[in-house]
Length: 168
Image (tube, rainbow, N blue to C red; front, side, top):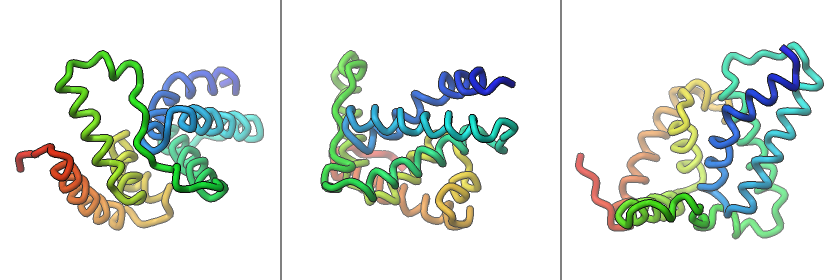
């Protein structure tokens, strides 16, 4: 398959997911910049490696997104701005009032979590397997599963602290 066609297909399939990953962690402007950088990296890699075919395109693209995020945090002068409460997107303002409160509560709860917990929950939420997440983070799949249990407990407590009560 032609690299340009492949890139366009990957962009169409995964850009919104990658943007959402960054938007939960950063403000809108930073999420835009990091999403663009991730897909620039995808394009550059595909240009250099024409016959490259990973086991999972989604996992490979999210590995690039995780690397872009890590590079940004490492190179950022003011890391205090990272993982600040994200701006609400215009589409979210169209939700009924109770859904908007839920969105704010979820974002607030995510904001309270340690970066490691947030990252695991987001990657799992995007449908990546424990094995794929483990490869991205260079940890065994069993460690991912164990950390996900802990991250879910932390998230549930953070939601409770934000006034959201979850049954079970």
